[in-house]
Image 1 (spheres, rainbow, N blue to C red):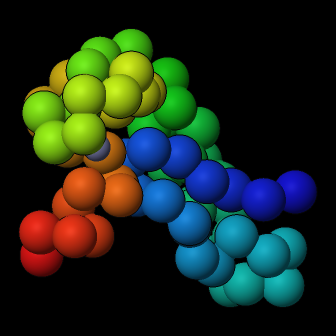
Image 2 (image 1 turned 180 degrees about the vertical axis):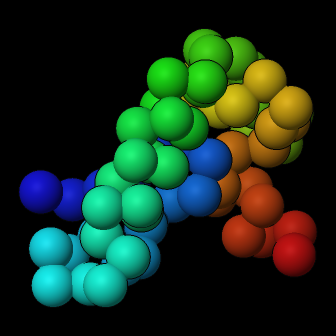
Length: 64
Ligand SMILES: [Zn+2]
């Protein structure tokens, strides 16, 4: 199953063979739970982001 979201885009280390798999999945679920529906300051799309994030992953990739 792919792990992808608007905060970080594609998540790495999400294969069961990864030594940090369980921690990574736990963190992913926490990020999903903390995320709220908001409008990205960059592209104006409705995205699910953590409350302290203003830009979606696609915009962050372009700017940094
Ligand atoms: Zn955006």
